Length: 345
Image (cartoon, rainbow, N blue to C red; front, top):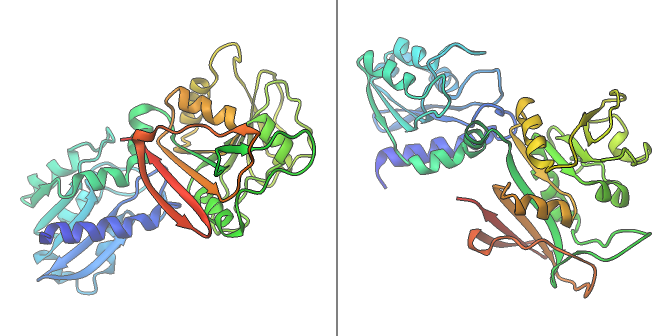
């Protein structure tokens, strides 16, 4: 492996620490190397706080070394004033001799301006080291800005014979996850800005949609309820987490619950995407029933799919959605369950 690729791998590795805190900003990692040794590194930990380059520079004990150092950064340094000053200006000020960039920033306010500023200052700049991997790192950010919608993850659990639930009128749902895989589900929830279920799931399962078994911030809860028929006693309406109800009715917000009116005579998914984009909701986890999940698949509105398969058969019931087999990424075994991941290119 080439030296530049080695250090860029490290940038990508530490950048992932910002998965929960950086959004709606992209995850970014930075590494500073002098005489073949890493002397500083950092990542963008939280939106509104210092960027990766700033944290990496701050971590260097002897700033005199910066003048003969190379800084590796997974994303082009910003060149505009936002909540923080431009990182490109700081790199120029500290007189780093070389900058190696993974990928150019697709955000319109940057998009090459940081690279231009560095080169105008006489700094050697190389762009495109592990570019595909660096773009993959910021796929949520890119999807949101390019497609004007959140990055969408579909998740469901099913039996080994392909059923998501048995047919029921009363009683408890069949347990397809165990205590350990439920932790994985809550971890995934903490990594998304919002989580969506349909009316039937809300009514029959009465989910809290929180992260009780993981650390972090609970996602905004979204539920479809066309006629506002869901009982207010459900966990979704307990006021503990901001909740949005998509409905055909008009209703004033109350108890941390907001009601957004949609036109149910036409496809509601594009309308929902418009609302979520306007609210800067960059990632969405869909945990609804088979009908809701299939509607996202039918409209090609998805980016990742996670399917948990339990080692039991139901023989009858609600059929699980069928993911696109040509988008299979990997299959793993966790805690007695098979977890299959699908991903769009």
